[in-house]
Each structure stands twice: as C-alpha cells, then as structure tokens.
Length: 411
Image 1 (cartoon, one colour):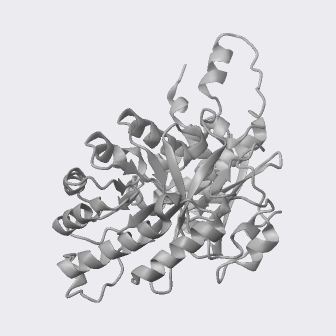
Image 2 (cartoon, helix red, strand yellow; image 1 turned 120 degrees about the vertical axis):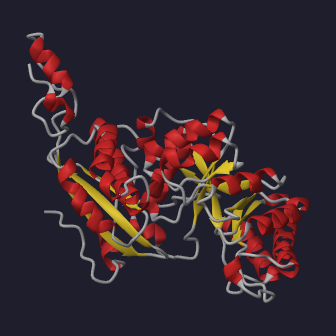
C-alpha cells in the first residue's frame, strides 16, 4: 500500500481512516468531524491600533472570530494562507497551525507578519472549534485555573514626561476606573537628552525616569501594582544603571529595557538587578522564547497571543516558563477579540500574572462585540459560552473600518 499521501494534509484519507479501512471495519465520523472550513476573511478596524479581525467560515454555518497583530500586510498574507486550510476540519488546530507554518517557511515563518497572520487564524479556529463541540476555548487548552484574569491598564497622559501628571493619572485610574494594576512608559523625553540614537542615558535622564517611578508608586501606594515600559530603548550599561536606581521603589516590573535581538545582553541586564525584568512581546514562538527562559534572562515573560503564534503556542511558552517558576504577563493591544482570546489562555495556565489592556481611553472598544462589561473591577471574567464567548457587532465593526476596508462578505 502506498503511504505517501499521509504526508499531505489535503489527502483523501487520514491515518485514522486508513487504519479502519485496512482492518476492514466501518469508519464512524465523530461529532464535528464532518465539518469543513469554507472561507477565511479579514477586515481592519481603525482602533487605537489597526486591529486585523479574522473570520473562519465552515460549511455547517458556524463562524470563528480571531485577531492578528496588527495591520500592515496581514490581510494579504491571510489570503495566501487560505488554500492551505479551506476544506480542512477546523478541529485539527495543531495540524493546521503546523501546516501553515511549513507552507510559509520559505518566507520566514518563524517570526514576523507570517506568524502574526497565522496567529489570527489560530485564534479563529479556537473560537469555531469551541462552538462545534460546545465548550469554551479555555477547555481546548486543558481547562481552567481561574474564572477571571487580572487586567493591568496601560496608562497615558498628555504630558507623559511629567512625573506629577503620571501620578495624577495613576490615581485617577485606580480611584475612578477600579484597576489595581497599571503600566507607564519610561522611554519618554526628559529634556536632558544629547543623542537618543546611541541609547545612552545620562545621569539627569535616569534621575528623571526615577522621579516618574517615585511619584507614581508613592501616589498609589499599596492600592496598585505598577510596571514601567522602556520599549527596547536603552544600552546595556544604561539599562543596568536604571534598573539598579529603581530597586528602591515598589516596581512591579521594568519591561524591555534593551533591544530584543541579543539574548546574552538581556540575560546580563536581568541578572544584574533586583528590579524584576519583563521581556517577550517582540519575540516569536516557543523557540524564540526558549533561551530567555532556560537561561533565566527574564523574571516575567510577556508573549502577545495574536502575535507570538496564537493561543496554543502561548500555552506552550507558559508551560516552558513554569518549569523555571516564571510567571506570564501577556502583552496586549488588541480589540475585544484578541483580548478575550488572551484571557482564555490566562485562565488555562497556572502561572498567569496579568493581561494588558491598552484601550481605556477609547470609548467604543467594547462596542465591537454584543457582550457588555468585559472588564469588571480590573478583572476580565472568562465566558462559559462556546468558543471565545464573544459575538462581533458587525454594525460597530463597519462604523470603525479602516480606510479602504469593506465589511466581511457574510454570503
């Protein structure tokens, strides 16, 4: 018998069917095994970031919603990925994911836009698969540890470099919006810069950043944890000096203090200070995160679910991190779809620390879905409805489409 077709995911037989045929027994299709993907579509919503929403359609009428990080050429890449999954069973999430990665391997599918595009489809597959077998998406990841995931609010002020303005905003977000976890940027102008391109921080610049940290942490006290983001802006030596200067304050974590490419430098920075260091938003897949985790080059890992490879890939990263007792704080700048997908991951892993929320100043963020009160008292409850548990409000999506975009073709 010729077994070559077993390597082709589009082959007529699966291994299970071949075994049944070989043994002379009838093949009974299980619940959902006769469902096929018929189409994949995208639209870009003009939010505080360009949100690329992804929909996977099936021949039984069920539709899965996902999201890819972010904008750019993602729609074109997803269109090219469509032939690799149309006609396939949406329950075979792992196999379809690996197949898409392999098909795009010649174009660098270990990172970048290709992985982000695949992530968007993978999120939508979890949504539609959950609907088919009538379980929440977290159940597809192994069940849940918690009913809600803690949300940290990424805060901004008109004068981001003003320490007192940052402290005022921190107090407002805690007192009025009910968050007990916050983040502020530290890669902001201080007025003391001579040449920002060389990544070197002069002493007055470090003192200015420390003043932001001091004012914010003192203002909220023990009412909130506060993290600070550097966006890969500083040299190794400057990052070490800054991190050591911040050791005297109650810093939840210092995020991405050096550029992401050189893991050796990242390890030395992390191990030089008692300030917790968070890294991972700009690293792709488990393979990309492996050295950072195994060499303990970070204290907290921060994958972005619609970017890093999707929900199952984030689950793998969390499992690797848990071997080294490292918590997971998921980066997130998504619409409600990507944010809720991250919440399902957070429910399903033991070491979930928090999930980022980046749209607190955008009044219509929640309008994109029909469900209300997605974030309650600084936590995101994880729905018990099948799939992600959200229903896109297509009218709201249409109202906020990016220029040149058209709504999904529901026909």
